[in-house]
Amino acid sequence: MKVMIIGANGQLGSDLCRAFQDTQVIPLTHANIEIGNINSVKGVFNKYRPNMVINTAAYVRVDDCESNRDKAFLVNALGARNVAAAAQELGAKLVHISTDYVFGGEKDHPITPYTEFDLPIPPNVYGQSKLAGENLVTHLCLKHFIARTSGLFGVAGASGKGGNFVETVLRLAKERDELRVVNDQVFSPTYTKDLAKKIAQLITTEYYGIFHITNRGACSWYEFAKEILRLAGLNTPVIPVTSNQYPQKARRPGYSVLGNYHLRLLGMDDMRPWQEALVDYMKEKGHIK
Image: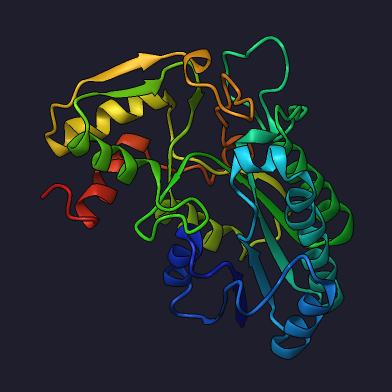
């Protein structure tokens, strides 16, 4: 069994490589494959002929997507299409990683988590391009799993974003007298180690379709920052602010909590609370004992 992991040096990709350590893994980075180029994708797939493919590659800089729409759709939509078509040609199973930002564009914010059966309405170009990629995967690859997730933090850090929120908060807390963090964007923080383990379990099944995979529970970025500093024993004040006080190019959803409904229906939702996952992460990084 050969598992191809696209984006193997990223935050999630690194944990996926560890989750499949007892399997033949084909780890690919941007230097090995350009998913926006169909010839590059076909050449790599024909060379390695994988049985399973996990595509973590994406253009994830949310604000940059607003001003670089073409790149967002080239990578997140057409890139997803190219990988899906190549996987279908080989009869390989495909896991495509997507985002909570396909939701949150409606006027009235929900008070219950989004399920896989809710209608996505993306609030920004990043979400729009990722939803387009989802749709292409759905239509082009029969054996597909679309894994939507949220607020990732992992030991390797996100290469496309220069780290992750946890590390940024800890660094700034030591550099500044106070932190100002938005308190009106609610989501589900997710540890990439937990996500990778669930993907490794899911891909062995034939439960194809869309899955929400996040750690249990929800919080605002402000609440997340407060818990990070509490665990680290840092007393830097954290000031809650609104999104209007922290303007960004791309509009973020006020609520994008994902419910692991499909997993729950299958009896597979054993994802732990995000607070427990955060403790595990901070121990592994050496921030706490």
